[in-house]
Image (cartoon, rainbow, N blue to C red; front, side, top):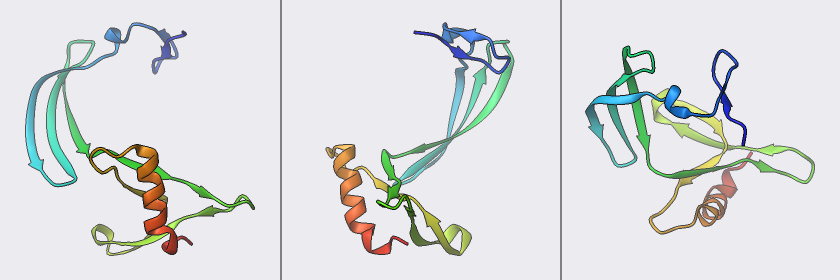
Length: 115
């Protein structure tokens, strides 16, 4: 299996050459759907860098396409931006639920909102 290319376009098959290692983790927030943390990592060059990380519960997103090749989106009000946005149909995966089941459930729940 061929390796991945790094930013310089070189093939990298040993990811230890590009992996960053966490040397310190600071949890900022633990919520119902997401957590926030700030990590200090050691880069492959040895430099210490800061990474802001959002941990999100497992979720699915579906792109609904009609027989006529039109894309259907969901219009939902989002408090963070104080307006309605157009989005792909998406939702959390319930505990013990298969992602395909989650996708089907979300399409049924949001189906009436598709535009």
